Length: 240
Image (tube, rainbow, N blue to C red; front, top):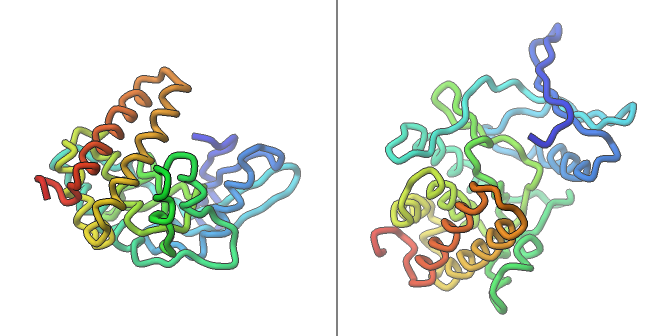
């Protein structure tokens, strides 16, 4: 969505998905982060073949994944596939020696006072589980779009996914129940998850205040509902 170029090239060695932006584009640093983190990603992520910066362009060449976007609707057969892909990612430690975002920096403006330390950790996080970023192919979910790799607490990704499940029609109870399938979420103390809920609600309030787009307003409402639910100390769904 944010690339000036997005094409599939047919080459002598097979197809390559290429996305790119001008080298002076404001988002070029995000693309460079995506390239830097690629060698550390789990097998569920498409392989990066090359990163080229030449003739005023920054270009990434990826393995072609010919799939469809994930369906998050309640009862969807894609949900176990998404769960498996996230479980694989949960086992990955964020690499050192490359510049990626820290969760404390990303949520600094939104976390309640005195809670920012809860977001610290060494897990490699994706943080954006919009269905567009999950491709289903061959009975497997593939995670794409790594422009914002983040180092932080492992429970953040299940929480981010729960919000997207609510967007797809899940109740807050069933969305949190899904998050609780991951040990990182189950092991987090209620006050930790409450801080996440409050921070997420604050973030989406800001986004909704800046744009009248209906989907952003809806996401802000879902985030507020998630925050209220977690503030009540519920972290495993069905009142758990």
